[in-house]
Image 1 (cartoon, rainbow, N blue to C red):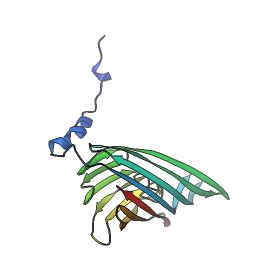
Image 2 (cartoon, rainbow, N blue to C red):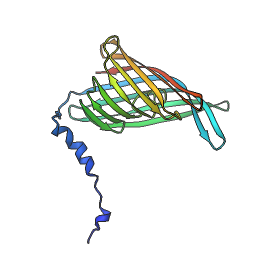
Image 3 (cartoon, rainbow, N blue to C red):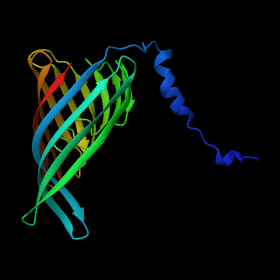
Image 4 (cartoon, rainbow, N blue to C red):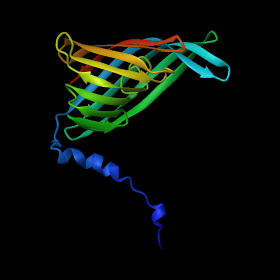
Length: 209
């Protein structure tokens, strides 16, 4: 049976993503660790439908966890729930999202986004649902820079996010050490759409071992 070339397609760039780290000297062996986060927050966003522009408040809770193996594999996920007040009724939205990635210290790519740079120092990130809670953390989609500014911080993330927010906004996420392997994470987000405020705030605990 003869197969037409038009019916065969292989994304060669995926092969490059898998093998490129070895060419630039990344070690396939990296220390294993677990990373667990719990966060609670709330906020306000704008949305549009056929009847016009509307505003909505929310409260959300999220838990995320992942395990990084000695090799370049990371597995985990996020679970959460968002509570909306709608016409005097409570509307609960469950969130469940996997975290599957190839993760080296200087580079990672997976279902929760891509990172270029040292995971423990300066790096640039594009993220999808990568910070619990999902709504008031970094949102559904974010891009920014993470770095270690020194005491009293252990990390600082500065970026922008969208979704569930209708427009892009500024995100700040400082992290503070509170004991060995335990960190306090505070997230704040602000933007506007048609002079309407869109904001989110959350606080959480991250445990890395």
